[in-house]
Length: 141
Image (cartoon, rainbow, N blue to C red):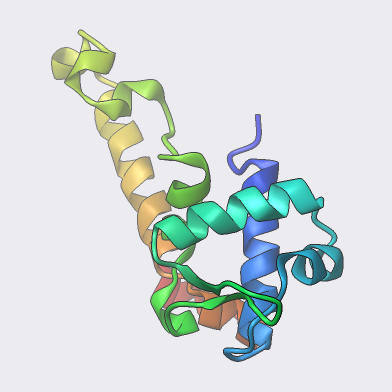
């Protein structure tokens, strides 16, 4: 089982591509080709990112997409949630209605701690970090 889906990987690639362009408008076809993402997937992913305010679009023959925020304001957890929804270690962490044993389960506490560490780590890595080619592990944790 993959924690991250293929379309999330595509989103990361395209956001890095946009981040490297520093505000320049990029046509989705050009971005898809440069990032080796199938055009249909690229268009759908960019629409999701646009709907959540991660990227902005300009219509017209010279239009395209660009980041709506500074790369330091875009973290991996946000991108993951926009593209594929919540990432959980186990479905029992989706809320009380997901598991009736949650109140007395001996495993839930440890899984919750793992979930918190994972979310903190992903929230601590920004697009700016990816563009710099480094991730400060202390910052991410």
